[in-house]
Structure formats: C-alpha cells, structure tokens
Length: 381
Image 1 (tube, rainbow, N blue to C red):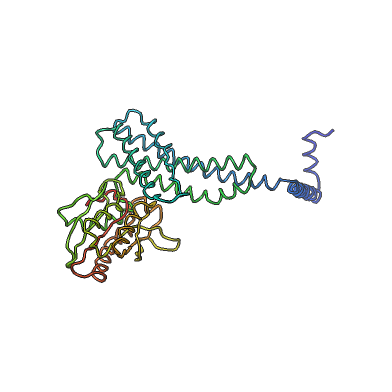
Image 2 (cartoon, one colour):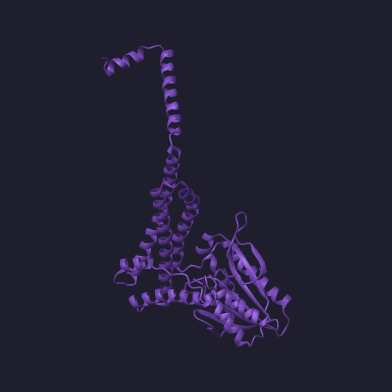
C-alpha cells in the first residue's frame, strides 16, 4: 500500500493533464452527488427550513439585544431613584399584558376598551408610586415609558421565538417563510424602541411631539389654563375675533393625556357652540415621502386605539361640528426619537396653516377648538 507521502509524490510527478482530469472527475462526482441529494424526498424543504431558521434566529438575537439593553437602562433608572428591587420590578413590567375586550358583541366596546386601557395605565403608575412614593411626575413618566418599551420588546421577542420554535418543531416551511418575511421590519422596530428609550429618559422632544409643540405656540401667551381631563391642559385666547381654545397633553412629562375626553368636555362646556375642531398630529410617512411634509385633510388626526378618537367624533356628530386635520409626515423611528430638524421647522409652518384655516373657515364670534395631539415629552405649555 502507498502511504500519504508516496501519494503526494506521485501527484507531484504526474503530468498536468492527468491532474486536471482528476479535478474534473472530482467536480463531476460532487455535482452529481448534490443532484442526488436534492432529489431525495424532503431534502429541499429541510434546506429551506435551515436557512430560514438561521435568518430568523439572527433577527431574534438582535431583538433580544435591544430588549436586554432596554431592561438594563430601566434598572439603572430605578436604581438611581432608590428602588429596592429593580430586577424584580423590571421583570414585572416586561411580563404585563392587557386582554382585549370582547368584540363579538360590539355594544359599548369603546367604553370597555377605555376602561381597560386606563386600568393598565393606572396599574403601572400605581406600581411606580408604591415603590417610589416621592418620585416627581417627570421622572415617573420616564419610568412609565421605559416600562412600556420593555413590555413591547419582550412581547415581540416572545412571539417571534414562539413561531420560530413551532415552525422548526413541525418542520413547517410555510410558518418560517412568513416569519422570515416580517422579521427585518420587527428588528428595525425593536432598534427604534431602544433608541427611543434614551430620548425619553433625557426628556427631549420626539417627532411625535409635533402636535403639542404647535399647541404650545398658542398656549405660551395664555396666562390662565385649566385641566379639562386627566393629564391634559387647555387655554383660551382670542384670535382675529374668534374664541380659540387650545388643548394639549400636560408637559413636560412623557404623556399623550386624554385629548378625546378633554375635547368632549370642552364642547359640552361651550354648550355645543363650537364652529370647528382642528387636530394637529404627526403621521407615518410612506416610502418616498420626505420628513417634515405637511398635509391637510378631514377627520381626527390621532393614532389612538379608539376611545379618545371616537370621543371627538361623537361630540362633533352630536353638534354637527366640522373636523379638520393637519399632519406632518415622518418615519416610525423619527416619531419616537429626537425630533428631526425638518419636523421642528414644520411646526411654525403648521401654526401659520392653522391660522389660515381659522380665517378661511370660520367667522368672527365663532369658537374654535385646536388640539395638538401627541406625546408632549419635553414640551411645556
């Protein structure tokens, strides 16, 4: 028998043509071997499952990284405020959930949804106030937002992991291919949430603060303000002979308040004698649109699950009040992270547009309600 050294020596001494033939022969063997493997029952599906699983696992690892980073920041914030068990509290925030109301019977579903949403908000506030009874409202709102962020990230992580494991367990390529198609979007969303937490902890206005920023332009010159509903502030002024009532969430805490209930109460307070309702809010842009673009429309500009938005619509229908909407376009990441320069510059343009709408669509003596919708973090009144 030839040992390895002799085989190498023979290969080195062989003519180049024989070596090339050997290479071609080996390539043919590999090629036909792969064809044979591909023809085996289920082999292609197993390959698809393997590559899809790897891609999903990579995305899941990125989401888990964002989740762990958010948890770490929340723990640091709690420790800074002297919370006794930051690890336990963070885990409690991450695992919280709210069950949707029954929608088979839609009667009074909005009232039930409002109850569940506010109960969920009060539960988080109650936990924070019990753990940190002396915390100030601004810091409390930062902890609340951090709790919501880690809860959202934890939910995304658990759901993706669930369908990944189920797809692998059932050898279902169809489950994995659907998951594979949406994971990149969820990864981008998770990374945006992680960045958003830094912005909210710093107390810096975000893109979604556009509405409150526009409202604050009017409220700053109004000395007397009142609270028409929870975490909402309102002020009354006169603009070109019209009574203008301006509404926004109470800043500079990180909150969206309850603007729907506020408008409903204001309309009733004015005995229905409101000539127009104008809503201003940030809106998600489509691919190809520019950040800071302004658009005008009809209806309630508000990204709300339902209760706040429908409260304005019901009040408007009851007294036949037209509703105008002005939006400024931005991406999801821009909406929840530091306000872009283009959005900040658009705020002054929106103020002028609102003034123009009031002059064109109302007359002296009319009452107009202006609502700046959005998270008012870093925006005072």
